[in-house]
Every structure is written in C-alpha cells, then in structure tokens.
Amino acid sequence: MVEIGDTIVSLDLFREKFLCNLSACKGACCIEGDAGAPLEMDEVAKLEEVLPVIWDELSPDARAVIDRQGVAYVDCEGDLVTSIVHGKDCVFTCYDGQGCCYCAVEKAFRAGKTDFYKPVSCHLYPVRVRRYNSYTAVNYHRWSVCKAALILGQKENLPVYKFLREPLIRKFGEDWYAEAELVAEELQKQGLL
Image (cartoon, rainbow, N blue to C red; front, top):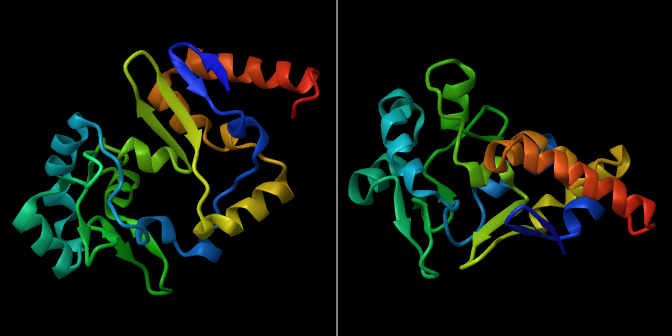
C-alpha cells in the first residue's frame, strides 16, 4: 500500500495489467453480481435528471424497477447502489444487436444529450473506492468476468492506473494522478514493479 493524499492505494493499481476487452466480455460487469454499481449521493440526482433522455433505451423491466424503487437503493451492506433488474442487471444496461451490453447514460453522454458521463464507480472499474474515517481506500477488484481484460492488459503491458487515467483524475484530480505517476516511477526504481 502507498499513500497518495488522503488515500491509501493498493500496489495492485501499479502491478496489475488491465485493458477492457468489450468484444470478449460483452460488458458482463454491468450485468453480473448481486448488487448495483456504488453511487455517490449527488449521482442519484444526476441519474434522475438524465432519465427522460434515456427512458426509451431502457428495457420495460428496468423502467418498472425505476418506477417502483427509483434509480438507486441501499444494498445489504448499507451502500447506495444503482437499482438492478432480476437481481443482477443494472437498470441502465441496454444491449446492441450482437448481445453486447452498454450503458444508456454513457451512450447519451457520447451523443451530447447529457453532461453526466456515468457513475464514477462504473468509470473507475476495476478499481473500488471506499471511504473510512480518516482515509479513502483505493483497491483493485478482481473478478472472473474480467479475465479477457487481464489478458489484453498483459499483452499491451498497461497497468491499471494508466488504463484508468481519466476516471482517476475525475475522482481525485490532476495532482493526485501526477503523484500516482511519481509513485509508479519510484516503485519501478526500487524493483517492486
């Protein structure tokens, strides 16, 4: 572990290689699991704002869940997360003609229909952030559905922190990321990477 600002960062962000391979996994991280994606409080309002823009993209089942419980709920661990359909699919998950899922919110952002990209936890995946009393933990999350991303990351020699440059800056800022790059250089010099 290393400290960057008020965060404690797992060395796995520097050691592990990762590059999403959507053609292989078909977006399984959006449709597998037992809870929705973690949300920050302000993201609930942003998701509610974008709903009219993406409503027609959502499945009838997803719309029914949103009508019944909203865009988010508190899971069994007490975390605020996106609502899910049938105990697994994020309500914002949609599918293309080839069975690959995509995020309706991100699609609307890329089309210039909203200024909200998607929840930061989705943007940061496979990194998970958890706030504790005096610090924030930044950890790499291992999940079998991302096996193809590990293989492609190894092939391209792309560390997790470099793959996630944009979302890490979105979450923690440019200065934090610049310090992470210095940490990576130092770890390399010490032969720890």
